[in-house]
Length: 409
Image (cartoon, rainbow, N blue to C red):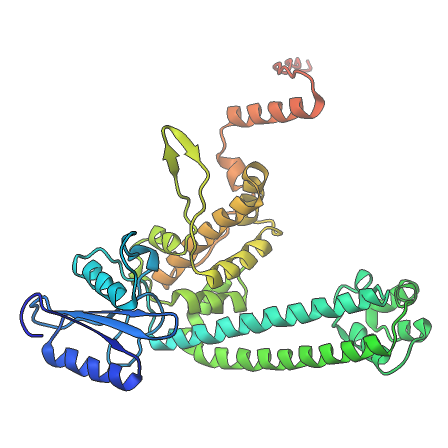
């Protein structure tokens, strides 16, 4: 293996062999190590020596984490290293192709966070998965109640609140009288007792009670697991409390959203030279697809789905606020549709996040919902209003100057 341009390829399947391979690479002072993980977990590796004095970190292709702690790994999207069509495709040939791509500098490494951030990301992603499972279970419970002609969700906004939960438990325990069940309402819900009595009139029997009891137990288990994850996440994100509080100031970003954003992006923004680099990495930047002078519709690409889910929730909250970002969403949704508006406002949120994490002294300041109106030219605004009025009335609108009113003597 010593000597410039020498390569070695092989197949390593176990942690022991991977560790032995890492020791060999360190001993030989090899600069590049390319690894490819197959669907079954088999690791095909290809090593090359470019006669460089100092070894650099292992570059791991195809995603995932470094198999051993010997090397700090990065990853590269598989679309950057696809094999040339028409050639045979095997794990070994793929490993060789990956090494060639790496040697020629044609493979851009992806972002791999430090170990504490990766562990925090595991917790936030698992919490989101449990929240999704909990939501599905609640929807299944509502469907069972609909099957029994129980229309509680049309009267109670939160079926799993204090009043709703007591009614459900009473029905499971055998109570079927709508008047007694409606009397279990608490607080402001007692104003809706007549509506509750009507909504609780149905065909709920022991079959439905058994299924609802099972679902409620599962919901309670998921709630306890989510609470435990919340505690663990708070402990792990404690060193970044200031960053969490800073992001919490952004409109629509709550404590949980701030935790998820930090878990997905990290706190070191030096990996993104500008805010545009961050937006592009997250696939929230517009892509111009033009051919023969014609503009074609194109998606922003497949980015981090966990980050996209968080930003989607943030934008959904922003859309209901009377703020600069809320007005930006509504303006874009009217002209381009809700989906494009979500991407555009998500772009703005990521830009704000980059600036706040880059400069610890920076603070978020809302520009206000009237920011656009104050910067729009009056003539342009006049044309827009005339066009809207003509579209509304179907008549031609002509604007005349207001006559001057003579001053009283």
